[in-house]
Image (cartoon, rainbow over all chains, first blue to last red; front, side, top):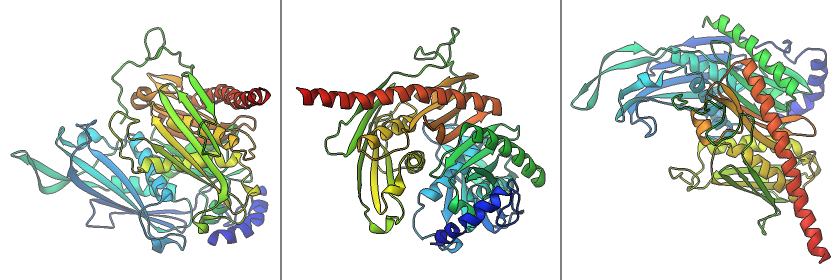
Amino acid sequence: MTGSIAKIKQKQMEQLLSKGKRLDDRGLTDYREITLEQGIIERAEGSARVFLGKTEILVGIKIATGKPFPDTPDAGVLTVNCELVPLASPDFEPGPPGEKAIEIARVVDRGIRESKAIDVKKLCIKAGKNVFVVFVDVYVLNHDGNLIDASALAAVAALLNTKMPNYEIEDDTVKITQGYTPLTLKSRPITVTIAKINDKLVVDPQLKEEQVMDSRISIAINDEGSICAIQKGGAGYFTTQQIKEATKLAKEKAEEIRKKMGW
Amino acid sequence: MKKKNKKLIDKKGLRMDGRKPDELRSVKLEVGILPNADGSAYIEMGKNKILAAVYGPKEMHPKHLARSDRMVLRCRYHMAPFSVQERKSPAPSRREVEISKVIRDSLVPAIFVENYPRTGIDLFIEVLQADGGTRCAGITAAALAIAEAGIPMRDLVVACAAGKVDETIVLDLMDTEDKVGSADVPVALMPNLNAITLLQMDGILNPDEFEEALNLALKGCKKIYEMQREALKTKYVNLKEVEEQ
C-alpha cells in the first residue's frame, strides 16, 4: 500500500515538475548517483552490484554446460532470470516470478541479446551436443524505482567480470580443467528508462515517481549509439513527439553513463 | 538469434510473399462471433488466426485484486499448442506472461476504467495459428471485442509492426521476416488521439531507421483502423437488417 502515499504526493510532484524540479532535487534528466562494484561473489563466475540511488541490484553469473537449442545447435545459451526478493520491498512476496519480474528479466535479456554483446557461437563446445549456458540472475535487494536500468547495468557489469572455465574434450565428454578465460563482450548495451508524469519526461524515475507515472519507456543503446531494444510500460500513452524526445534523451544519457563507467 | 543468410527481398524489391515493403498482409476481421462472451472478435492477418473474447464488467475474483477507484483489466494472451511448427506446451511461457502485460498496458488507456470502480474485465486472446505479429493482431482484435462488449472507450486501439529486413524498412513482418530480419518494432495506436500505447523493439536500428520504422508502423495502424471500423459497423448493420426482416 506504499502507492497511496505517492498518490497523496502526486500534486506536489506535478507542481515541482512544472518548475523543472523533482522530489529529490534532481533535474528532469538527471540520474541518481550510480555506484558499481564487481566481483563481490567469489563462488559466481561473474558478479556485480549496482546502486542507483537507493535501488540496489546484485547480479550473479553462473556458467554451466548443457545442450544447445535444436534450432541453434552451434550456439551457446543465454538465460536471464530476475528475482524480486521479498526483503527488498514491502510490496514483494515470496513465490515464483510474477509478470513484473518476468518483464525485467526479458527486457534485460533483450538488451544483451539484441546488441549481440555475447558471441553465442563462441560458447559452443561441440555443435549439437555441448554448449556453455550463461545464467544471468538478477537479484533485486532494495527497490526504490527504475529496476530495469539498474538491472541492465548490473547484468552487463557482471558479464564484463565473468570468467569462463577452461575445458578439454575427452571421449566425447567435456572435462573442466584448471584456470579461467575472461568472457569478452562485443557490445556494452546501456538501458535508459524515461517516465512520463503529467506530460513531462523524467529520466530514472524513483519509486514514488513510478507510482504516479502515466507510462514509461526503456530504451537500450549499444556501443555505436544505435537502439537495440525498447519496451514501453505502464497504463498510459506516448505521442510520436514524446517518443522522438525520449530516444534522443536515451542516447545522450547512455553516452554519459558509458563515459562514467569507462565502457 | 537473428541470422542473415536468406534473401528476403528480391531484385524487384518484393518480399517473400510478393508484398511491397510498405504493404500489409490481407486482413479479415469479424466482430461478435462467440455467443457466450460479452464481446468477441476474430482476426486473420496473413496466416495469423486469432480469437479475442471479453467477459465483464463483473465482480472481481479474487476480491483483493479489485481496485476501489477503477476497473481492473485482466489479460491473458495464449498460444494454442498447434499454432506453431513445433508443438508449444500449453503452460504459459515467460514470453506469454510478458506479452499479456504489454497488451493490457496497450488497451487500458483506451478504456474509461475510472467509471467502473471495484469491477474487472477478463480479456482472453487465443492464438490459433501464428505467423509473426501475433501481439499486434491480438490487440486489434481485442479492441473490437471490448467495443462489442459495450465498454465505453476513448478510442479504438489498433496495432501493427514495422521492421528491417535486408537493409529495408518493411511493414507488417511475417514469421520468417520476424525471425531472420534484423529488427522488429511492434506499435499500438489510439488513432484519433494519436497516442502510442504499445512500443517495443528488438534488433538494431540507428535513430533515423527507428523513426522511419515507427512512422511506417503508424501508417499501417491507420490503414487497419479503417478495416476495424468497417468490421464494427458491419456487425450492427447486419443486426439492423435482421430486425427489419
